[in-house]
Image (cartoon, rainbow, N blue to C red):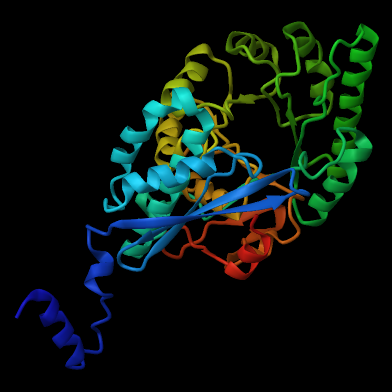
Length: 396
């Protein structure tokens, strides 16, 4: 009698304690058989969430997020290409998939990175299910059971003005968030006169003062610069930002050397790095001293494993980690699972006001608590299944 028949016979004989799942489900040779891609338009179809569901030969499936932009997001085309290469391969062949896809980054950029990352997230979801453990257990185990999120109110706000930000911020506060991020200096006028530019930046400061007033003295206000500043202007605004006791000033300028100069002068943390790809680019931020807080995006930096690697580099350099990622519950939980294992974690991004059906997208619903605290799901894998009723109703 072979081992499988012996186990089946033992269970059938009535051994009450024999609760071991079917051996095939736990086998090391679980194979990828295909994938589905769902694009869900949000914010009146200005952009969307792209979700990937990878299937296997043992009936397990896993989900990940490749969100980039609109329905024309090139990552949507790259996912089937990479899945075709993975078909028939083990769900544990993540480094092999990395070696296959990474050389394409120079040509395909974020399309390559986010397509790879979505598949990688899904593979870790499957691995966790197969092992009966959450993804966090695959990355060293948890240091925390909840992840603090700040409410990014940019995409939910129609204009970059105090009046435009106010309704979304009020909604975020009502939802229980005690920290918020806004990009008040966006939509800088082109070919503007010095007087017009001054009015633009003063209006940005008015938005920051409005946010501070609404969220109160104990809440946190995070400022996104989106590289709208020249060095002198960035240095000149530091005192005004300090008056509002901001949490950080993010990516005020594109040059890392100039960022380092701003960091040396700033009385608060400088953050950045949302668009970086791989540990090599993260190393540039560390070596130039550009940031106090690095912000790798799990889908653009190339996945869960790369996020963990980058975090270890930053820990050695005394730099904190606060992943970028205005995404759906799927991408947010993937980042949260890894962040729960990171010693130098600071805070995670949450895109507030994107879609009123957000909490109907997954089963169970996203477990967001007061203060923007997200419970890290303890069920096997990522912890979510897709609510296909919502997915089918919302997909493009």
